[in-house]
Image 1: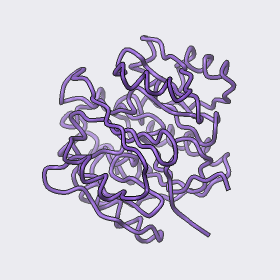
Image 2: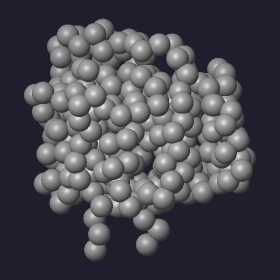
Image 3: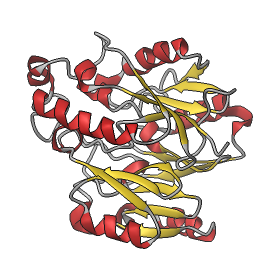
Amino acid sequence: MKTYGCQSMFAPVRRMLLKHPRDAYLNQATIDRQWKDLNYLGRPDFELAMAEYEQFLSLLEGFDFEIQFAPSDETTGLDSLYIHDPITISQKGAILSRMGKEARSPEPEAAGAYLKTLGVPILGGITGDGKVEGGDLLWVDEHTLAVGQGFRTNAEGLRQLCGLLDDCVDEVVPVQLPYWTGPQDCLHLLSFISIVDKDLAVVYSRLMPVPFREWLQDRGFQFVEVPDEEYDSLGTNVLAVAPRQCVMLSGNSQTQKRLEGAGAQVWTYEGREISLKGTGGPTCLTRPILRSFE
């Protein structure tokens, strides 16, 4: 029985990797040393973050999939909570990112070392001048990958990624990202789109390149539009644990209602400490290892 492979954003999750704040944040003193340099919007409170995460974890445990926890690693920092970015899981194994945010550079090796203990082979990693972060990779379908190119993922990283994926993909679609708020902040492709079913995506259209938006429409996608006032509160960051089975940050009531109007079920969690201050929603907090309809 296969235990890894994740070339979908919405197929039912069977196995998921997380990193608990007790192993990413460690303690309040670590937070106090790091949060400003990492460009967080506010100083996380360790105890509140632990409580929020337990709520988030309890929600995930209500679904039918296996959860694994990446261990503490002395080389990584607060951002390692956002386990989605340092690795990509293809049908043939894992690819280690090379992070566009320098402070996160130790994370891929640390995550890769743990994946090996879970029986996930490492296909290779992005090297040299290449940059790739998981938040820039969007599986449109099992064999079609859209890749954002901006401050966190570049053309050389995309070239290497294509080589490592080899025959796992039929089409790779580069998506040029805007400058937006500049290199000090994080704008990924997944900052403005989450695919939650084969023909449904949650989007913030103001940031979508027109050719990419029209290309998705030509493929039959319908859009749940996120209003301006819910973009900064991570309304676009929606985790599909199965088709139209969605987890999102609470407080985005308009987006939630629009999702439910499109036939989705929605579960929410409080994430002021673990999501809003570090600008990482439920997709960022999770790295599915195996998704499958079987």
